[in-house]
Image (cartoon, rainbow, N blue to C red; front, side):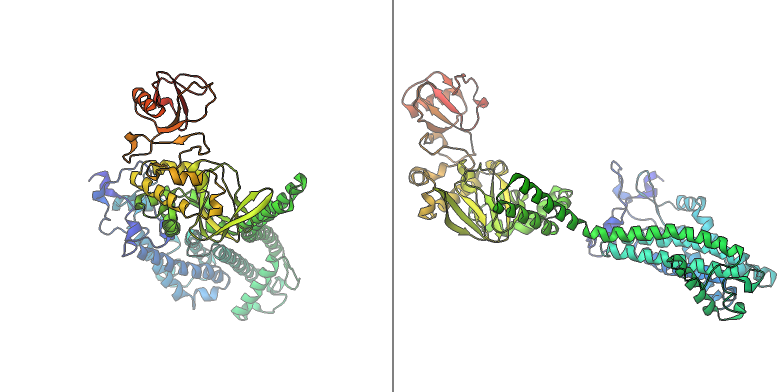
Length: 620
């Protein structure tokens, strides 16, 4: 048998839990085991062997959960039977035997449960390896010792019921089973179906109850084994307490343990003899650590829920100090405060820190689910391919803006454009020192694209009218995506020109070259995201070679004179593939033949691939 026959990838276990084959809960992933990087998994050995139990099989998990219930009983019964020996041989004896029988079955099952190899993170399925690993570890002898009913075995072999306390202390080995409860809480803390706060809170309560129960029972055991019953903490209060009701004595024991744990100390029940005083000293020292553990955990749980609020208050105070120190206008200070408050309010919606840790494919799927309908309604992307839409949405970032906040400032450098998802925006123009309202924008409208397409300073200020959500894409990302999409580029340009034609007259007048451009420009040859100066510095023309639609190419402005001759008029052309074609095209456009090509600084051009968009070439 090869080594691969004894191991199997645990990956199918992720899907074996649900009949539909889907992972419906993140808890199933968090509790699953995965092979280490670089581990080669043979697909022929993915199935479990016969009589081998997967450790994360749902039925085995239910069995473990059932055992946890029995562990809770054992944790209560073991100290109780030590203190009150009558119940150990009376009413609780049959229950103990049934519980021990279930744990004996679990010992047998453990010989068939596959385990995880820490070096390869694969499940080991070989029966011999599973059994050898269990027997050679400390778990096996402790499981056996905590399961065997020694008092019953002694009675079978001797015929007598032993009343000494040795079996009471041996039964305390059952507390070894508490490790199952600890493992359960670890799983529940990682399980997203359960509140982390309440899981931790219940865990702290269980620890406290077990400490009170165990200390109370042991304190009563000390009283029952003192030479003089009246010279004990309970004997001084209850005469002949050993023959009184078990539950009365148990109540007194829990009462003493509780008031001592909480450091109340009424004084009605107190240590009397030397042994009790020594025990009380160590118990109170233990309580100091337990109390610190409880208070520390509870404080952490409570403070954790208020951390974001504290951060927000600190950020607001920092803004107040900054605004006061730099004497910022009141309106600008209010915008800063509104932005900080909105940032914390929308943190649960954006969760940027969480999304950044996800793979790009998942982030893209989330963005596609949230914003696809809005993008498809936007005028610029109507009719484009699904492929382009997916690429664009993957590069978009969602942002929130509070009311009365400027998204775009007039005359700022165009770096991004925005699509409004919900809310309302006002388009404003500053002219002669006054603010003029131009238009109002709603859902699926765009802002900033005019400055990006023409590579001019933003012609308008855009301000939120109310709380607004937008998606933003940078002009560099947009250009890179669109450059490779030939047909979609033409659709986008056509949509953009149609939008420009439909603009209100007062809006057109704020863009000086727009009217002339719409009258003279051949819209089939405009390319997006290419900077061009439409203020009389270049007369835009196209070559006959570029009349056929093709991919977006580099464009330059050519002049028919030396750089130092003051004429600034030029011709905007697509850069040909060779220097010879450039000279021929220049002769056709400028009306004269040239032989030398230089830049504006006088440097001679020898290779066309060294040029960049919008370079000025002087040919003479």
